[in-house]
Length: 290
Image 1 (spheres, rainbow, N blue to C red):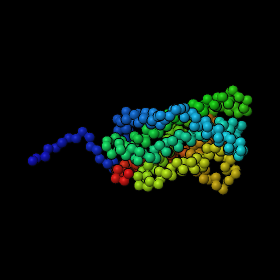
Image 2: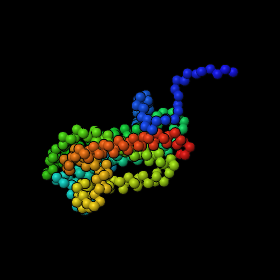
Image 3: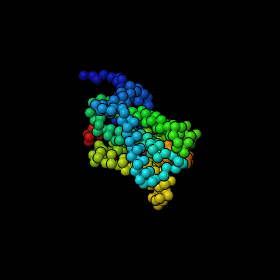
Image 4: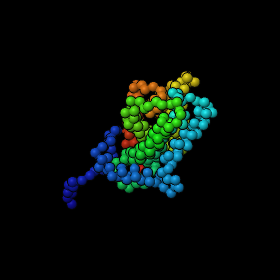
């Protein structure tokens, strides 16, 4: 029997490139990306009493606790007369976006093994949807932060009256750094958990430890003054740099060094590319190990 040549419309095969981010293909599946984002937002607080109000409650309660413990009991200064609550809210708002992207993408293969094994679509869409859905959450919390900023500056007797810096125009770029860093870090962990399940239990614990090493509840200058011999641990942490830059842009506290801004950007992009390489390599055979 003679074989006839068949012209296939699509050919599905494992990716061969180390860094393969096909924007054209991702755009073709944009409806699926939108559905994943919608799913993440709707199902996160499904069957809860307060629902989306948790977007507001979590950062506010955390800021109050940090203010009581670190600023009132431990007497950690905020600098420039900034209200402690507003200082902590700025750090928590920026930290929450990174940590949500990290934890949300760190379980990609295990959480989606059912759909990954049945239908083809660009796998990177799944962690991307987590980054975009958390961006909406970040936007809501940023509005909450803006509300309290206006309240403390214009409607209280607080001595703090500094206006946002001109560098605030770079805030969208800084948010992109947070997303890329969290996405890259999460894809690395997700790829490793297909073989080493212990990492699943270490992620939440590790994120909590990383928060204390990211200058969320204290100024970087305070750590440099108190423990100068270990300050390099915080200084080389890109998230500590990003949080310090976020506070400078919004509250005018600290210093803005373009070298630090560039460092945070380079580390974020490198982590994203490394995560993408490992993610692409893992997706070829993960179904055999998950």
